[in-house]
Length: 150
Image 1 (cartoon, rainbow, N blue to C red):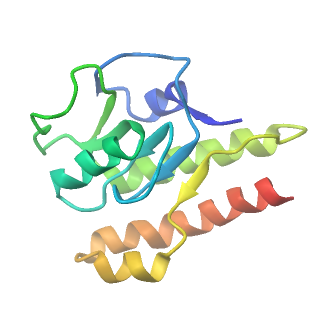
Image 2: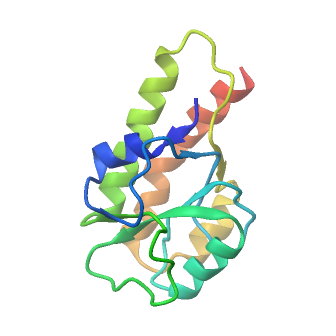
């Protein structure tokens, strides 16, 4: 079961771009620099260039803080899930996704998370609050990765 638009819309109902309940994400990335086919981009840095890289690397949607302006280069149809609290909403999204997967009898497909180099990410993250995001989501991602292998 891939993470999908509908699950994100439950957590972050305020969105821009197309509303496609059939849209599934095969990857989630916290940086725009990695390949992310059918990806959901979740930026940790206030850098719109990261969004451009993510789109160029295959992202088909993004999570974005409401108080930040949407970059002008963003395609009008590109789904952007707006959040007031990225840390809390991403954590809630991963918890709900993990709960849904663990209820499945046979897990065949799981969204791939491109956040495996946590040390590098921690070095890049500048603020305590955003570093705290990693500490909260890493255990959830590790559980999801374990389900994929197990």
